[in-house]
Length: 164
Length: 210
Image (cartoon, rainbow over all chains, first blue to last red; front, side):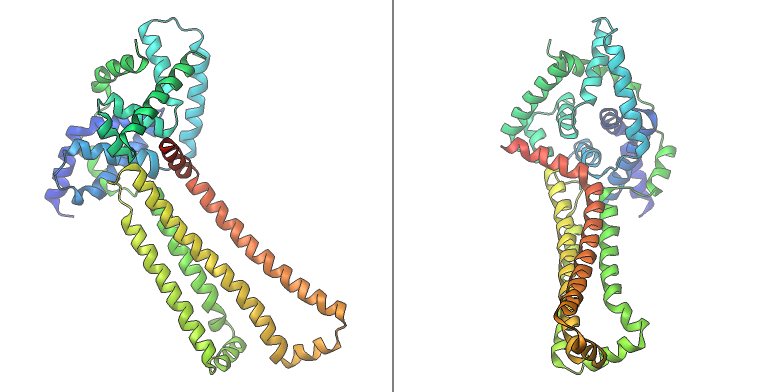
């Protein structure tokens, strides 16, 4: 790979790295796992970069690669899975003790999102990123109608987790 | 308030809280090896190809008797045609694997990416299945051939009574079944572990379609 290409890539990634961090935030639950996934997404972005033509925005392109890596390509290490289970348990215990202040409610919400499956997390992620249903359907490879239906089911599921 | 709306509000706010990576931290990452499922799948498929080619050719290089028998057999056209055919089939599998690996692109939509990975796995599955069938067929064929042409075996079989003869066939059949089952289970285990999450996610995506 030539140097300028590498430079271009690192600059673009540095500017847009929040997207990768946000994917990691939804799919991992601790510092090590976050960095692990961040690295794998970076590798996948870099490998695919020569094919990036600039006909879409770099950020849009990153959403795809980032989510695809998190959902499909990434293989969690054992350490990561164990810690995740531990964290969930911890959150569950504390859930009963919390008041309903906004901050505590947010904590519970993030915890609930972490309990969703990989596909549901992807839908939540794209929703939080303010993507419309057309973009969600294009990224996931499903129809717009199905994206809507699934999104509603995710909302119901979140409500059930929060108010069992 | 809608739960997700509350989350969205915080999501935007918390954007600056991440520990930012500097360019100097990103450069070394580009040199690190990927641990992606596609890479593992690729190594496994290459290993499968090599494994079966070795299984098929190793006896030829290891044993003089085998080579002698082999040369003898190869005077007959049927054997030459059969082996040319079997190598042609392997080449077809190599080509199909290459093509499907090429079609896996991280920039596809999630569903197509998963579909292409699963397609690659299917090709390896058929390759293994083909080899198992071929192994069983050649075992039966070799047994039949030896029982007709090998003077030592012919003499032994002549002294067998019916029960002994059936036992021999039974043992032979059992051996074949055990061999095929072990390899099949081993194969199932590898892919079961490797692709458990992918299969689950692909089903989940397809479920939406209903």
